[in-house]
Image (cartoon, rainbow, N blue to C red; front, side):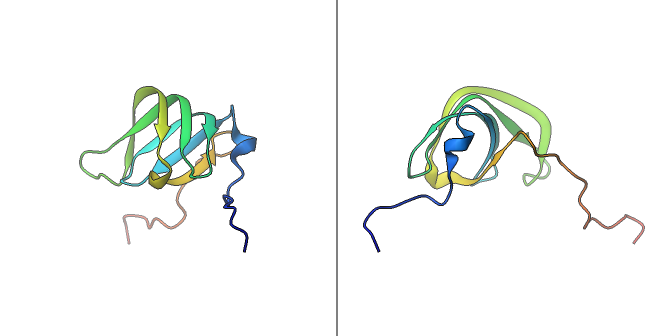
Amino acid sequence: MSGRKETVLDLAKFVDKGVQVKLTGGRQVTGTLKGYDQLLNLVLDEATEFLRDPDDPLKTTDQTRRLGLIVCRGTAVMLVSPTDGTDEIANPFIQPDGT
């Protein structure tokens, strides 16, 4: 094994493109990826946070909050996904209320 650490993600292809980031604690932000490092610290420009539902903190609402330029610490990053080319679909596992 070499002493050089490499990340599993190749974020170079997402620089200057829109990304969605989920953080520990349930926070979710979108923005333009401006930079990153090997520890997965991310710099997002024009970032927007999706606010959580006060009744159910596991769900996000349509309400947003503009954050501007932010740094997401790598230890808090759980998921990074592109915003282009992804669509939200209905959950196929939700049972109808009549069950």
